[in-house]
Length: 408
Image (cartoon, rainbow, N blue to C red; front, top):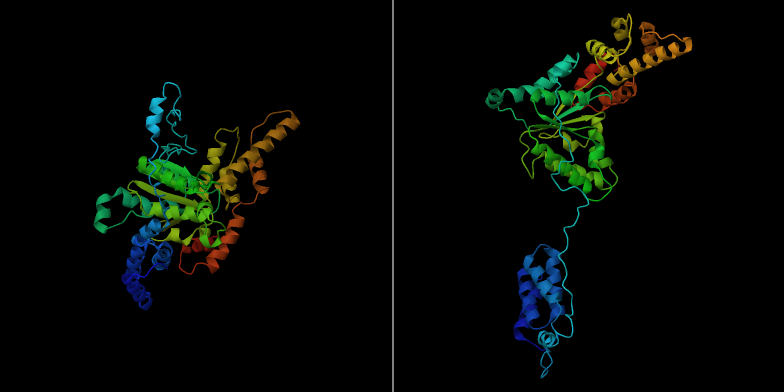
């Protein structure tokens, strides 16, 4: 400590008596800096920042204390005038520094925000194009379409359009098809997003991808923004190892809540085979707070799917009724595979006999006998959820369906 200063000594004593007085400490630190006592001043400023990290006055004093001192000019030695010297010898000696061209615009490593790399399509599907599945259609109508179509009634009843819709059920049962049909019913664009569109190995890029997805949907409004396999993009954060997925979920929550922009005209849908693995924060009101169970196709839907996949194949005397009865529990994807397997059976038989023939009832029934519904493992897992993880009634519709099918 340098020579005694009555004012500084008094302030030091006051700080010793009241060490919690941060304003007093900062006043003393400022006077100490004026007196050239940098080290002691730094000690007091550090004490303030330890208690109040965001204190701007303390930050400014710390920057002042740590700034290098300018060297004092040599006494009696005039500064050398480099500009004058260069001017005198400019016709003999070139300039010390060559002029530099302006730096070109950097090439971005990724497409800029708001780019058009996310394609928005215009589906011409309607719910009427989906065969059967009347229970699912009614649920979609009540939860999503009716409020959108009746603006006056929506205003009368104060029905909010905030929040998204989560389609869940076993794989291969047409959740994406329903989402496209909903976009068609609304006359809106359709932007489908999968896990590969969002997740990236580079830090910060996944969050930016999520932001860009919402930017593209807002630019194309009205637009249905559809997240496929939501459980892969937004797993429960308690089960996530590493920070990338956590940051993606946080960014998704911010976008859904409209923190940085208004989502007017953006209708957010998602599909999940395992909704119980989705982070609970995404299931709260204003987010994916409405759910629709999409189950394997019913009799009417199975008939329509079989007719669709056989329409361009050479079939003969096919009776769909027994085939529909034989394929209960089959997903739409299972039925498409069944038609493909029956085609292969007829093709191989034609090759072995040397005579081409049509696909018949026996081919289809034989293919069905060789298959088991791919939805079985899903319902095994869903059974545990319906029995032991449905305390809040989230999966009542799943439990009711499984009871009707005698799966519970």
